[in-house]
Image 1 (cartoon, one colour):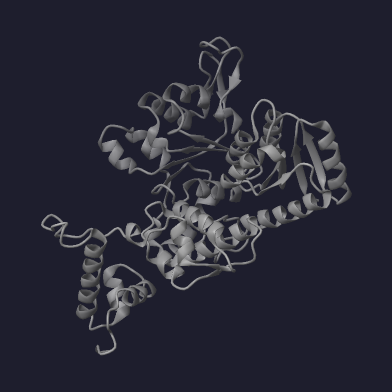
Image 2 (cartoon, rainbow, N blue to C red):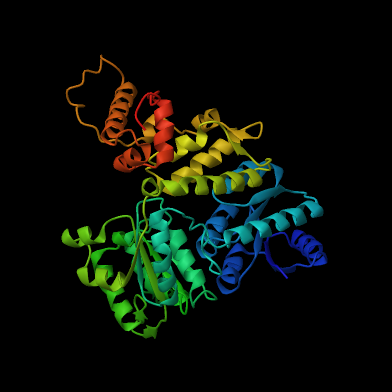
Length: 460
């Protein structure tokens, strides 16, 4: 029996929804206060959450953000009055599954929940090549991703600290969620803190809690994230942003398994697995004196280095297909097909924003698509630019006169020259030329067509 959490400050609506869902075989828990609902989410598993947009204490958008930090894989359906439809649309952009306008049809709500349950099942499906493990979104058939899977198996079975390194947008938080929900602590909560987005003056209190009266506005004692994550996992995102004095305190906690709240003298035992993530090279930060060497070694007992998307181009079609169909379903569109040249263009891009950028571009392109096809035109309307996406480091720019020709023309000429050189040096064997250029044969074939390189009369 699926477990549904319904959050609305209108008790009449709560009762109407409860009656309808229980009649369809669902177990329903109701909360009229979103803060109380968040406490329930920390303690128990829910399969779908239904939440109002306008609520006391915090609004639906803030509630959605907090839910995603606690239970990223649980679909959230938003309820909205006609006047707050723009807020609901904004919520969908930030990860809500769908929204219903009040008054809504009970059958429609049940249909939405059924689709949300299917979506959660897809989010919890194993990645390619994995059996029986919950690898949400960790997709990959590229050599670099395949090499990562055996390492992940061992990391999951361990309880040691893990350092996840990778460029922005490579899926570090997703990897942390995967490690937690496959490990021995999966029945407990995972608590997330973004060290880069939290003011330095608040990080200590956030992590360790504080005693009543320990500072201005500390009107009551409060537990910190370490205590909230007891028996579970604490994920510290952008851990390189942690101030040096707090790095010392964190090291002490990792070594002793005890914390002390700000303004308190009581040592409290905590049992927490810590996962850290950063988009910087922590060894380089250590050399600069901006990160403690002893903390680095304590965090990097186990290490995961996530490759950027440009180094795993073979995975772009797999990821793109997943995003395409996900957003098509979410936007109530029929299944979409790729238009001519679209997948080749996506695969050829360097994606400096990595998976996050790919996901956002496809989401916008799905909005602009029509006729059952996602075309190059829709991709361009979504903000995709083939020229801007190619990150070539080319010589000779210093001596170029802008009046001779434009930058895109210059880049195209340079790209054509590089490809011709590689083909000539490899006796026109495209597979070998692609390997020399650091791209896949499929991408090379696309570029040959795009740049009108004649290979008809060349040797085989």
